[in-house]
Each structure stands twice: as structure tokens, then as C-alpha cells.
Image (cartoon, rainbow, N blue to C red):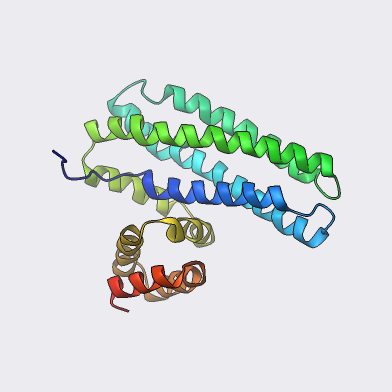
Length: 218
Ligand SMILES: [Fe+2]
């Protein structure tokens, strides 16, 4: 028998990260190395992805792991080692982006290195969503987990949240998207809610937009 679902601190942000990683990797694979404008645009996208990944590791280390470790000592050790590895890989990927302009060899190195980074992160995120969620759910109430999440959101600037929302909201299931935006409408100032709708509307297909508009009574 299914029990009521618990609050999943990882689910939405990880969907956003998977979408951003997949998009950027595919885009890097088809970029024209001799088209300077396109290469600059894709480079900027890779840098933005890497900045978000670095920030994500920092948020988990700062807010999520201490909460878990306080009630199940030792559960986060392997994940912290992997995070340290991800930070080193992000440094190396940023160095490869800097070598890009005009170099097909540098583009190939970056594409292959990013593919490995994405593969490792997909496995890592799956284990967080199973092993670390199990630890969180065994020791924390949903309200306590939501409080950890609220501290993460509060630690970010509005511009940083825009990037997160841009990648997260279009890549949630319709019900999840409506749930998140409904929460935002209740909690945030009206211009923030309206700005977010304007940000994601062009990124949603007509079908998803109509579902959202109907769920929110727009
Ligand atoms: Fe992580």
C-alpha cells in the first residue's frame, strides 16, 4: 500500500539540474566552433551551468548535510567526498571553457569531460534522492525538511533564483509546476509571481501553459 508522499527536498531542483545539464551537453555537441557568436553564447551557458552546479553543492553541504548528520551520523560522508570531487571537476571544466575560442580540439575535450561530469551527477543525484531522502524522512518531519529548504531559498539573491526557476519550472510535471507557482503566489510579492510567469511562459508549450493557467485560475 502506498503511504502519503513525503516532502522531497531534492526532486524539483534535481529535475531542473538534469534538464540544464542535458540541454547544455547536447548544445555543446552541435555547436559550430567557427561561429564566434554561437560559441560565445554556448560558452556562457556552460559557465552558467557550472556556476549553478557549484552553488548547488554548496547549498547541500551547508544546509542539507548538517541536518542529516545531526540525526544520522556518518550518512553523508560518501556524498561529501563526491561533492569535493565535483568541485574539482567544475574548476577543470571552467578552465576548458576558457580554452574554447576557435579550437576544435578544446571543444572536443570539453564535450567529453562535460559528458562524464553529467553522467556522474546523474548517478549521484539518484543516490541522494534514495539514500539521503531515506535518512531525512526517517529523522525529520516534513515541516522540518521544508524549513531546511526555506533556509536554502533565503540564502540566494533574486537573480540566482531566476536561473533556478528558469530551469526548474519548465521541466516539472504540470501538477508540480502548478503546486510550486501556487505556493509562490501565496508567499511572494505579486510582481515576483508575475515576473516568474512571464519568464517561463515562452518556455512552455501551449498545452503545458493551458494546464498551468487552468490550475492557477488565470
Ligand atoms: Fe549532491
